[in-house]
Length: 314
Image 1: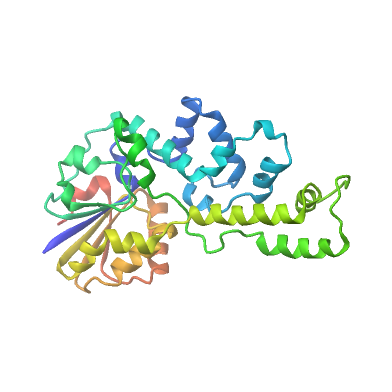
Image 2: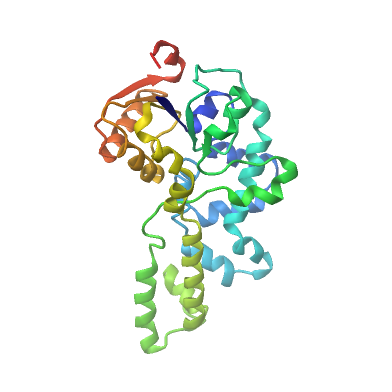
């Protein structure tokens, strides 16, 4: 029987790496990538951008996005940046992760090296610190490449949202345009307009619809394709799921954006399989319990703090 380890970002944080998205923001400031940082905070202007980065990617601010492209001075607009927004995010995430890899702390945990591993992280901490065989690790969201290969492989990173409502203002905008097209109220001298009226006053209907379509395409590109990812990468796990005795989850919050993976795993394991889940504090434990309820998992779960893993019979 083999064990299955599921590795989340808390694992890297425990080993001293600055891999939270708040750290990503600090990296962009420190390396003076001000334009990229400003665009991220403009387009994805949610309160939780740096706490829930991937979820925020599904909440693009359509008003700021369209205004930036077609209403303000176009000399300040970088069309190539917009065209390759997701690739730009992947590029900078790759640079950021590699930049911070030198900060490892030797906080070794008792890990069975002959186990199977699913890593949600972009780092290769398991290989570098624990000498885990690469063949035993599934990098579910890809792995950051070294500097000499950066132009080659960073595009393979999986970054994105899981929002079912890709563009939340679409219905309102389309209905509004239909009403205004009846009386031809597309003028350039209208004042005191609400955000959507302002957009419509500065462009033709045909142009607006074209931009709206591109915006939807952009949001779709930034949505994770979980099914392809599971079929390609998790097939070896599912083929051996009945042989897994224990699942040890280290540093993962079981967040909604990854629910589809955990539903697939929890839905196929044996009733006898023990599930060990690490947590940081009481608040994190409550959040994990909530996520397990949403996942409808009622199996045998043992919670523990990472620093107490030595006390467990794993």
